[in-house]
Each structure stands twice: as structure tokens, then as C-alpha cells.
Image 1: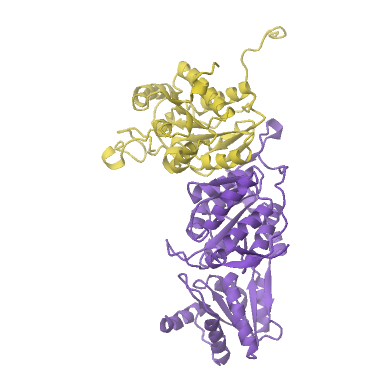
Image 2 (image 1 turned 90 degrees about the horizontal axis):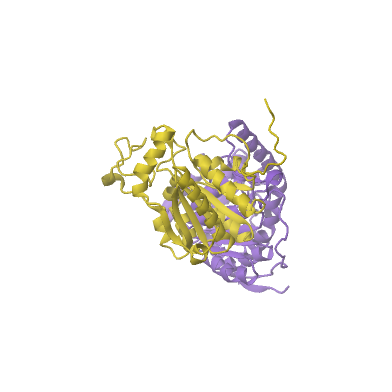
Length: 260
Length: 370
């Protein structure tokens, strides 16, 4: 086999330094890996890897600290925004973000996330919404779509009994303390690129001291959705986008003027 | 430094400030709120961190975050708030980071009322969050002792990376006494090696309570239990009063112990051979000291502002060595010294001891009293 001589070649794409080069435990087709990669690329690009503290939550991403190559703490279920607040308030010079799923953030953790947004806490939240509790095996989350079958709504989510899904971005964008709230999706390359830009702008929000920022990432959960990875991305596009419209819910004017 | 008149809640807050506290997170709850209010002005004045959290759950998790960052961090609350913080204690114990709580106890269960009680004993000393861990629990009996205890406990918890809880009741929190404040310490400017600080690659720190492999969790629990043995050896504290020649001992912690001391003094003035043992560290509990007095005296009277929670710990050591009896008030009622004195006299008079559990005997007596 011929050995490629890379001596005079420019590296245009490489493994992010912020990400450890190992396999993850995430299921095939799950978008956690994509989200991890985007965060890592943005931290690399912004030169933040030597001042970042991540806060993992409870759910499939409880082990996120195994993959990121910088300081991490693990929070109790739903409490990541409070823990991040504790860190950021005593180390305001550090970059602090939480990584939370919809079961964590919008079920048990609504108090903490709403309060953090209201305070304008200068942290960033990466919020993965895959419409179910992934780690415990696919139970209904507050974000589960009406009629959607889960292991705890075997007949589909009955809104008469279980109410309607919560829309996190809309809720948090209505708070004065929130500076940058957007919803993106990870179901195709174009949207993944847009998600990366949103993560960049959310991180820029914190670096500029502008207060609370969150990127909601619509994500797939092929295993619990009982779909192949390809069908899962289609399902996300067809079923989740109408209920969770993509877009900028709130953008601080100082951020909307940024040219990245 | 001259003595000044301080309210208990404000006094322990100032003591923590002087111990070099970097961050206070709290939530209003009676009878502890003056500490939160005091911190809201005092901490920012010194350029330190104060934040009123949205709940006790959030407050303890903010402390968790700040503790992981390696700074001196604390919260204070009262019994219902302590119940909510139990989740946080378990995670903090599992992560092995130091923190301090002052629990200003009120009556329960449930909302109960805002009057003083000691009924958090079980949840603080024996219970609390899930899993195998022990907090260090100290129960001072005056405002001066509370100040000194809070001032010193930060060093202790940092030495063992443990949770330190100062357990007082609402009356110590709310009353005023003359206090000599300790000298002011600056906030530490360096961070411990284990703290998260934005490390990358080989300098990376991960602080979590997860040990997903059961064998690793068992190792972590074994390490904590070994550390607890060291704490038991080094940190057990108690105080004895009038135990020379005593034939009877009263055992009480915190304010109940202080009230009992008045009764013991009165008994001594009448020539009765009574002493007092006041456990200061409730965890680790002074079992050896209990055994020693049980060997010395014929009768032990345990006095608490609960239904006999510490009584069980006393019985473990004393029940085969001495006659153990109990007197308690609950629900925010406090025992008066003369109530305890009449119990002392009743016990010294009686020639025959019942085999019934001390709590059952007490309940029977209480029925005719209240």
C-alpha cells in the first residue's frame, strides 16, 4: 500500500482536541455523538479548552465526561443549572456549560432551568430533545409528542391524561434574563452546520458576559423509537419539526450583529 | 476582641465569613432566615459570592458546584429545607468534596411549626441521602460555641473532604448572647489540586458521584468507610460536667444539654450526685464516653427535644451497664430545668427499674403530664 506523503499538505479537518479519541457508548444513529463533536469543534475554534468546565446531567449523557478532554462535573438529575451556577459564580473567568436531555431538563429540572434563565446566569445550556427518557429505556418525557408511543405510554401519549408537550425554548425565551435561545436540529448535514453555528453564538454569548444562553437540539433516539437510524432522522423531520419549529427564539442584539 | 451581643443566626454567618467563606447559597426559611439576610449584605461587601437560590434543592446543588471548584462553600437552612437537601448531601458525599451546612432545627414532621426542636437527629446523624456515607455532625449549645464550631469546621471538612453539619435548634438561632468573634481570615487565593478549574488533557479533572462498575463503587465506599474510622478517632467531641463522684448522669446535646445543665446544677446544690455528659459530635458519636459513664453510674437520663432519637445511640452502649431512662419534649416545646430536675429526683427515688423501653415508659408518664 502506498504511503500518503502529507508533508506539504494543509490539514483542513481533524479530530477536535476537546474530544477524546475513543468510541462512545451511544447507540448507532444517536445524535449525542454529533452534538459532542460540534461542542468540541467550537471550543477548539474559540480557544476555550483550557478554561472550560462542563456539567453533565443524568440520562444517556451522564457519561459525557468520558469523551470530553477537559474538566467535567456530574450533576444530580435536573440540577445541572444549579451546579453550573455554583461553579460560574465562584469562577466567573471560566467557561461553564451544561449538557442536558429533555427528561433531565424539562421534567425533574424545570425549576432549576427556569430560575437560571430568569437570573440571566452567565452559563450555556446544550439541551438535547429526543422526546423521551433515553437512558431508562424510552419512557414518556414532558417533550413526548401527542399520540407518541413510549414504554410508559403504550397506547400513545393521551393528552387527556398526560397533557401536552412542553416547549423549552419558547418558555425560556420569554424570560428577560435569557440572552440567546434558539432551536436547531441534528437530522441532516445542513441542519447540523446550523446547529454548530448556534453553539458558537451561544458560547460567544457567555464569553461576552451577556447572560443565559441555550441551544435546543432536536435529536434522534433510534433504539427507543424502535426505528432504524435512517428512519429515525426521517421521523424527527416529519413529526418533531412541526411541533418544535426551528428558529431563533431570542437573540441578544449584540450577538445578532456578530459575524462568525 | 471585646464581646459583642449577637443573634445566633447572624453570629454563625459572621463566623463563617471570618473563616474565609467564599460562597454562600441559601433559601429563606424560619427560624434560619436571618443568616441568609445577613449574608446577602455581608458577602457582596467583601467581594464574595452570595446567591439566594430558587429552592433548597438548588441551594445545595450550587454549593455542590462551588465545592467542586475548590472554594469554601456553605448553606444554611431549617428542617424542611434539610429534608430537601438530602439528595445533594448524597451526591456531595459520593463526589468527596467538602462543604458545610448549618441546620437550625424546627419542629416537624411536615411543616410542623417554627419553634425549636431536635428532631432532625435521625435524618442528619443516621440518615439523609442514599448510600454509604457519614457526615460530620457537631451540636453546639450556645452562640459562642456555635461561632467557634462554624469557624473551625471548614478546616475539618477540608481535611477529610467531608460534609460538615452544625446542628442547632431554633432557639440558638434566634436568641442573643455575648460573643467574642474569631479573627478574620481572607478567602484562600489558591485552589486545591483536586478541584475543577478548566484543566485540559492530562490536567483534566472529573468530579462525579458515579462509579458505574459495582466493584469500583464498592472500593469508593470502602475508602469512605476507612476515612470514617480516622474521623471517629480524631473528631469525637463531648463535654462532661460534675461527673466526679456522680452516681447518675444526664445525657443531652445542644440546647437540651444546656437546659439539663441547669437541672444538674440545681440537683448538685441539693447534694444529689448527678453529672452531665453533653455529646458535641453527634457523628461521630462519643460511644466510648457513654460506655465510660455507664460503667460509673447507676442511672442515666437522656434528655432531648424529640422522641428519643439519640436515646437509641446511648442505649447501644449503656443498656446493659446502667438503668437508662428518657425525658423529651416535642413539637417545639422545650423542657424546663425543673421538669428535668423532677425526673432526676424521681429516678433517684425509685428502687425498682422497669424492663420496658425507656421511650415507652416516658410515653406513659407523658400521658398524665400533657
